[in-house]
Image 1 (cartoon, helix red, strand yellow):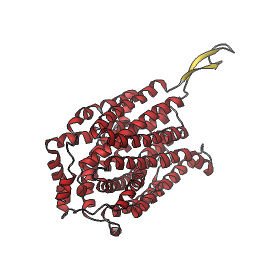
Image 2 (cartoon, helix red, strand yellow):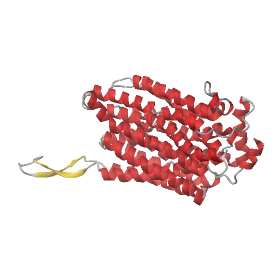
Image 3 (tube, rainbow, N blue to C red):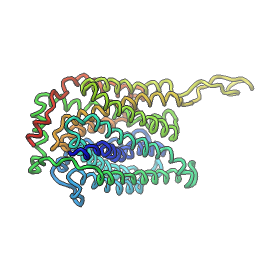
Length: 457
């Protein structure tokens, strides 16, 4: 890649991270808030975790992205053509979801689930294209900065669109008839989803303006595109391949599992308003994620990938303990309610729920800072394992395993909450992160192989 193209790479990766994160936040956090606000139970909300299944299955079709350019956009090049193609389809998909979405707790959720699943397929495919573009363009020592730029853009989508939808929902409902009117609230959600989906124009613009990575020797046939990534993994990792796949499968599970029930926990269990959640969790929290991502990329370059990933993995597990604190201490404070029971003028202490804003903010700041650190390091880890010409397929295998674990477990998260309670649910989310952390030393790449890979290509 030329000097000018390399200078444009990190801003382009940041913009592509935004396009990649936008559909993810809308189909996960925003849909969870939508259903929680309408009064759906935790089982229904938890089952929507299955919408993230395509992120785990994208490895099945990712080889196509290494072999062929997208129909109608081929002039943009192999990587950018798919980014523009999927971004265009996602704008249409969110319009369909807004039209089919539920209007009350009694509404059937299946039409919205089908539309959400189709969006997840498109979003997972876009992720594969963006991952390939980033891995292909940054190979050769720029993995850490590129990982930070990607996570930065990804979290900006959560901060801007994710927070804006929650903070503006009430104002939109007021314009439509009042936030106490169920019909106005339901319509406000539809407009918010459609408007948020329209921001996918950023993906189209990024595809048009970003530099196309240098065209390497593409797989000669589709069969090579399918089999080649696994052969490359086997040659570079040998017997450690099984451990690498185990770490990819479970390392991020504490965060992916906990996130599914965080919204109903804060909204229904602790009684925080959508505006409070939007400002604290989406805006302040994901701002801290951005700070963590920038610090994470710096630490990877300064400390090395292995030490940074080990430290950040420990912090990821420890940060989930904050929700145990909220479950115990965040439900309310003793206050005096005059004339409650007894003679007029007497006052007996009663337990009246008053969610602690300071407590929530503290937990969210710590959790999201740690999340940003580990996200940047783990993205860099995946990038070092991939051969550029198989970048879409290999990154899809690694990240697909990560999302597959989150999808399969988080789809049962509502049942876990009902059987265990929130305290033990979040405790379980901590425990599942220990085995991959212990296996990490045996899953690190021992030597960089760019030169060998380039020669093979």
